[in-house]
Image (cartoon, rainbow, N blue to C red; front, top):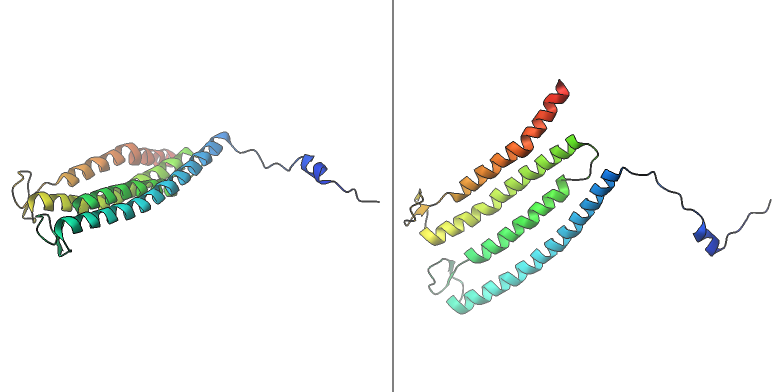
Length: 194
């Protein structure tokens, strides 16, 4: 029996083998994840380029304003370079990109609501931890610039008094995570055990 030969036009016209149809909700979740990955890549690139440009501008400014680097300080004396504004911008921008990366990592498409809730809880806990690690040096720099070296925790804005705003912000954020993310996961687990 002779084998039938198809021309290129006929090969293109033949029907392709189709994959099984995915659940519409899972397909939507995969599209959302792909958009998150694209946004993360764009923001990470912008953060990297922005950090290089901001660092260069900061170095040029401090060199022109205070001369060669001698130490980090906020008094404005010769050789004193103030890193506060630069660090706040770079670290907070990095925190936003880091939280985006955590969402991409932890909140992957899934078919069950219970798994999705656990992923969201992990994502929010990791974001909280990252924020505390990034915002602690920001808090230290701001308080050091405003009130000098640490002597006591106080809100009176006296020399040596440091305001613990980070502790309040961290506690409120942790409470939101517990109420809106951890409790639903615990309730799901109690229901499945019953």
